[in-house]
Length: 113
Length: 112
Image (cartoon, rainbow over all chains, first blue to last red; front, top):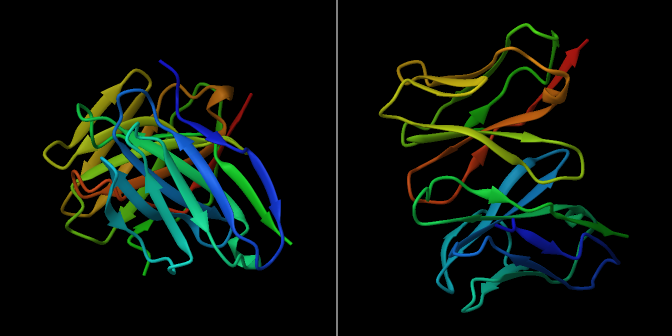
């Protein structure tokens, strides 16, 4: 079974731009969560989608948004990028059998200049 | 407010010995706990988990212990191997919420 995939793996943007990151969950998984990892704040939860609906949300500003498609693939968008948005963005998926266990993708490394 | 804490940023252990990684939490609503292992530039890899209805879960060389009254969990790795060198994160969840709260991580180094 293929794991969680994320594209692109690396991205460089400038302040003020916007960016869209993509995540394909493990086949059969309908829950997709997004996390941000930075040296200062560690791993922080952004939001979670299930069946195209946002079920949970973390404490991030409205510049961070996401969506999920009918095939469970998910995208995350960050508008008006700031230097502090430079981070590793991780996507995780969970199935309905072992629904408490999330499996992570390799991440997208975003650098904002 | 850090709800999940790993107080040891690093730990060095001799190959073949036991590695013990610790984690404390403050939110009594957490009822499911997980350990992940992470290499640089990769996503976390799930290792082992435990529900709050148990106090121990074992999987091969990995055992997780949960002390609910102390709000403390630990991961034991026996015997430690060089490939175990990585950063280990504990995470807590409220079952079904899919909203993991992570500790800051402990860098484990296994010395030959």
